[in-house]
Amino acid sequence: MEDFSMGARKCSTIATRPQSSHLGGPSSTRRANGADPTGSMLAIVNQKGGVGKTTTAVNVSSALASLGHRILLVDLDPQGNSTSGVGISRATIRMSMYDVLIGGDPMFHIIQPTAVERLDVAPSDVRLAGAEVELVPKIAREMKLRNAVRAVRGMYDVVIVDCPPSLGLLTVNALTAADGCLIPMQCEYYALEGISSLMTTIDLIRRHLNQDLKITGVLLTMVDARTRLSEQVAAEVKRHFGAQVLETVVPRSVRLAEAPSHGRPIFTYAPESRGAVAYLAVAREIAARVGLGSATGPGRPEAEPIVAASSEAGGDLVHG
Image 1: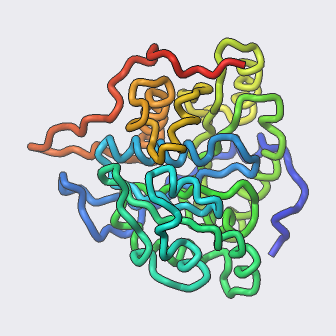
Image 2: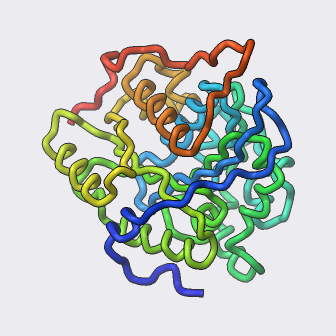
């Protein structure tokens, strides 16, 4: 197989390529409205750290769950921040994604419910840091996550994978298993640095491991609308990725930064903040892009979203 660290190509080549529709997994359970879960799988990926991957994973998962969809959040980052971000103490975890990928345990052994209704998590722990090395000699090492998640995909509308900030075997596993990927990009000068390497990796995954992988969206994060820099970076990202850039942007926010320290998604920590309003809008865009229908049905009232606040809710913009 070709080396995943091969030289970068121009990201516009892949960004503008027509995308195939996602393939849903088998359905073994039904939603409360009688509709089959779609089993769509979305990897949140960017090898650059600090761009909002985990914040996006936690809050998009929570928002989709609040809209009535059944969601599984898979934490593939050895730091385990998605796990703690939905209120699961890493000190209490007995089994994690390490046991699934390296030990061969079934996914349903490790999945835990969260305080958010309809949101489950497959937790991470620090042992995943060694999984990159331990996977190297394994047969079909790039397929470990795809094979493991197959048994539970049909139980969920969307499986969301929080990837580590690298293009190693854990990220390759996520992209091999996923139908699509969401790329968070910070609105700063170096936003596009390294993106060509990510595009090259996605291209290689398509050619060798997962021909149906698509770019579901590019999400601009930490946007400060008052600065010309944010405007310039946004324009440059849209020039490269076109319609793949989500309409919604996530503002730079104190509340979003504070919520993980309380082990809570933004919707239960600061439901009227700009960040909460933004991530609810992001979730709705993603639901439309992955083909999720309404989670409601005849005789069932529409699911009440957690956030019912104006985007003018103040007090959470970071200055400087």
